[in-house]
Length: 129
Length: 443
Ligand SMILES: Cc1cc2nc3c(=O)[nH]c(=O)nc-3n(C[C@H](O)[C@H](O)[C@H](O)COP(=O)(O)OP(=O)(O)OC[C@H]3O[C@@H](n4cnc5c(N)ncnc54)[C@H](O)[C@@H]3O)c2cc1C
Image (cartoon, rainbow over all chains, first blue to last red; front, side):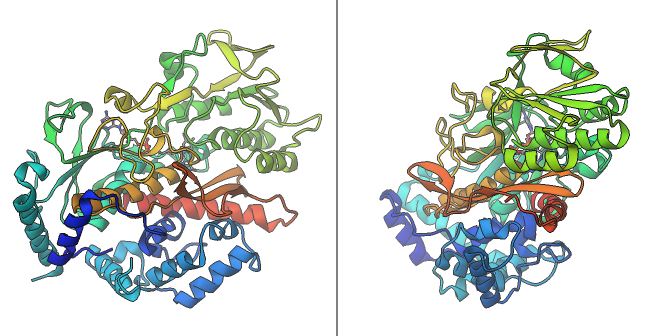
């Protein structure tokens, strides 16, 4: 997600606006990560629950956990079902996104901090989001 | 320049340039904006949300994530929102209605959203305005409607809104009816009979009636062990029926001679056709029943507001573009949550929250002249079959072949296992889910 619209990006969007853009191969890391919020807190920032916080989790840990849930090698209540909904690339994009989120409760986080974390995640993905 | 100012600055250039290229009329005009709009950039578009429940409130928050300076207004008829989520718990004293009551204060303050408490009574899609009961006219560039559901009584003779409000609460909208039903359960005579009649598909919260049936059974087991719950169902199957029935077997003697629950399916004549509120009798397809408590949950359709605004089709529900949740019937209007036709997604709070996030990003992208990203949705419904026994259904969704369908191999219900930890953990997660969910929606 890129919130700062540059003139060149604008020109590009004007050129493509008319044509039917080809659908991206997958949803953005952010769009997928936001789907986890009802259990893991907004931006993964629920720190006091049975379900672990995802914010600030090392990307490698996140990926290994998801892959193990998906192939059934890790015991699960519900995460096996959830993990089976995602491809390797999608899991990777979520992992990168969550790694950049601040490890603190959402209620103590400002919008500015959230925008910064989101931009940092864009950068970490090489601006591919 | 701070980041926010920088973005505002960039956005102004964007809009000016758009005007240069396309002419002012092609750029969404900013309408009359009633209340405190000083904080908003003059040129920003105005997104107006009708209904500040699960879908509407989530949408406002996540639109702010996607766009720091768009103007956002919610018009909600009530100053407080009581969640239906966990309202079954209130029936058996696990929660109070107070604990389920939320408001839009944090949405207003943290996310810079203008909140108008007023009832929407009409809209003019050509002029792009909505009208409220107190006589305000509010203009929008994009309109988002998340009005929940409306009840339909006409398939059951003798049952209507007035009967539900007085003697036979459906309690399928949390509030005074919830407390009335709680009292009726407590007043059930020893050895008495309670009837619960779930609705026909589709309806809000598909596991809701069955969680309620479970709670009734658990309550009877403790306080009224010779009592009984009879379920008169118009359907032959229901969501999570396999794990629910397993739990009923384990906890309430289901399928045994002294089961606390008797479930009569549609094929066995479970469809209720008539209620006599005075004598407490119901007529089902093949048999009449006399009971001490009768809880009929009516059939449903899209919220009254969606009907009034011509957003619903002949099915009673609102057709939407699966990628964005834009209405198929009116331009620049989006519909969320229970009111929509969302294919495999159930009418749940989780689903409304999920759709709101995708829609918020799509609206923000569209306002910037970008095409929306690929949609991804999810749903997890945890229900309690007893206070310490949870069952769940989960799926991730994508748009495939023009429909919202489960993605990968994600769709599934709780496995039946002999591991005692599984249902206990599901109950723990269920409570975890509820606490975090309402925060994701309202704060
Ligand atoms: C017993 C029960 C248990 C449930 N449990 C769960 C659960 O565990 N998990 C889950 O995910 N879901 C659950 N649900 C379902 C959940 O409550 C709904 O799916 C969810 O609320 C849908 O969100 P919505 O935005 O579509 O509608 P709502 O949340 O109902 O919001 C609609 C809003 O619009 C407002 N409105 C309507 N008309 C107007 C108007 N003319 N002007 C202004 N405002 C208006 C209403 O006042 C309301 O605030 C449960 C439901 C019930 C009944």
